[in-house]
Length: 299
Image (cartoon, rainbow, N blue to C red; front, side, top):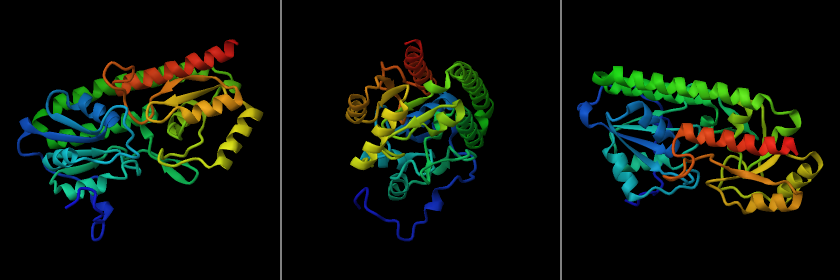
C-alpha cells in the first residue's frame, strides 16, 4: 500500500482524538512519537530520560507541507504513545497513523486551548503563547503519568519545573513588551503564525499569507498589504525560518520598512542555531522583536 494513499473512506478523523488508556506494558521501553520539533521538545522535557522520543517533522522543516516517509511510518507503527498538535496543523497525520497500522494511543496536545481564528480559520500555532505552552505541557504530563505510573512522580516533577520556567518567561515577555509605544506594535511576517503571540502580548502581526504556508498570496492581496503598510507603517518586517525570505524582502523593498531579523514560527532551529528548544525559541523571538522595535523607537 502506498504510504500516503488516501484511505479516509470508512475512517473517521475523530478516531484520532484524545483517548484514555491504561499503562503501557513495559514502562522501561516506552516509545513516544511527537509530530513536530516544538512539541517533541516539550515531550522530552517532561519525560526526561525515561523514554525514547521520535519527532516526525524536524528542526527548520515546515509541518504544513510535510510529506511523511517510510521511516516515519515505521516509527509510528512501533510507537506506544503519539502526540499531535491538533487544530488542523498536521494535515497528514491521520493518514500516516491509519496506514502505519499502529496500536499506539494518540493524544492532542492542544486539548483545552481556546482557539484563535484568522479570517475564519482556526489558527493551529497555539504554542506561540506561553500560557498555552503550559497547557501543552500539562496535557503531556498527565498522559505520561497515566501511561507510566511507576514513573509518575518523576514525570510530574519534571513538568512542574518546566512549567515554572514557562511562567517566568511569560511574565518577562509581558513586562518587556509592555513598554513598547502603540506605534511600535505592528510587525509583518511571511505567514500568519503569531496570532496567539499577538493576543497574549498586545502586538499586531500582518502577513501576506494566511495560516498555511502552502498558500500563495494573490497579487491583489499583496498590493493591498503594501498600500496599507505605506499608509499606516509597521515597526519592522521579519523573515521566518520555515519560509522563503523573498516575499518579505519584496515588501521591504516596496515599503522601505527594514527587516528586523528571523523569527522561529513553526519549528525549532537545527543544532547550533539560536532556537534549539521551545524556551530558547521563545527567548530568541522575544529578543529579536525587542531589538528591532527598540531600535525603531530610538531612531
